[in-house]
Image 1 (cartoon, helix red, strand yellow):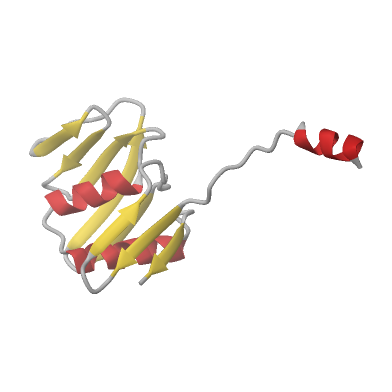
Image 2 (cartoon, rainbow, N blue to C red):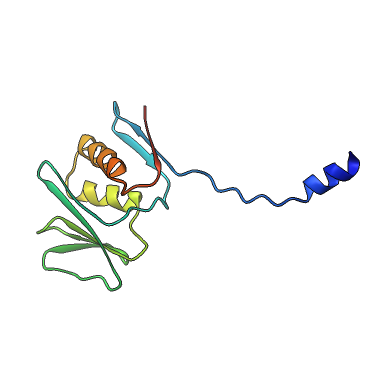
Length: 126
């Protein structure tokens, strides 16, 4: 028994927590991990059209708003431009807020993206 326990103690286990987005619809609160990736997608919700395009070099169309080195919002066309591998839920929510989306709109968009398979994280609505 002692030899067995000594063997078990030496086992390395790689644990990766599951990504989760928690939404409180009553208050409009959205909690998400920083690194939850979003696959490129084009969708429309009401008068908001979202085109997530990943590019190696970010283009800066006329009338665009530079958020940071990895994220640019094209205000004229409601497009979100990101560098390859940097499109996250946190960037999307921040961009939608800059575009004037309400918390209800953002929640609906995240739910639809989850159903479409663009977000791989679990979505929990409380």
